[in-house]
Image (cartoon, rainbow, N blue to C red; front, side, top):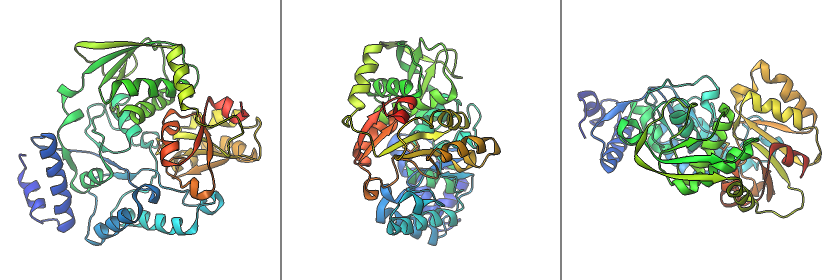
Length: 393
Ligand code: F3S
């Protein structure tokens, strides 16, 4: 790779051993992926925050890196962790888990990372412009940044996003380059989509077929930002999709020569809904919405539905602290909590230690969560619309 004089100096230790290590990580990754240079990035979103996912080895690495003097030089912010930092006791999170989780957060804080703890930074005022290069890690945030915002990011790992935050750069390969941002698969949607769960089911189905390709949707006359958020999250989870276009809606639309084509029907979506349903007919122990983290509009939709049925069940509504703290959200949050729900920040149903908390059966309206909960959370899953899961249908 071609490095600038500044980059060479960092590599040689001009900014200390941690920055040198970070730059060497980026150069190694760039060599692996055939990058010719590093590209400056304006922000980094860092995954690998939950003790549930990174464990003791991750905690030790982060504390050691902070001790070595690792410090970020661009706005950098965290993905969700394994618990609400203020309400973890109320959630039922074991104290030993909480102690380690708080140490992970403290290590990131020492490095200068903002403790946003959300997968929807774009709902909290962090909105890169079209064409802006960033280094984001959480797969749904990456998909949204590329597709809905028109920004440019590869799907960074936790460690490569942290290295990018420390160096202010990332290797210029993949979706940072024009030539890799053309769709090789065109998907005609011949099914009606009403609820977020429908967009999640569509995303699960198409992601499984696309397998990391850039794709373009036709036949979607409208899609709200929340619906695009659900669609991208599910495609990222089921098929590592990091960029998609929707005709007439997303800012970019480039097709490769002679793209493959497929049509998605109602029957396809029904088959996906059945496949995601791994629990039996009994009521779930946890009803969890907010994957990706809820927007204000989603909180309001939950507030309008939450009065229905299934009182006595745990009901989690996951969102960012920034959205929860906004005055506009106060009324919806009060309604949800008055009906027995918990509006949780900093965390989600996938990265919280559900099994350790005695929860084995979870209902969700998220295609992404429905994919990950059986493996990562050891959960039997009920998948359905917001209305259905809240009312126990
Ligand atoms: Fe976000 Fe957790 Fe879902 S990090 S995208 S709410 S799995």
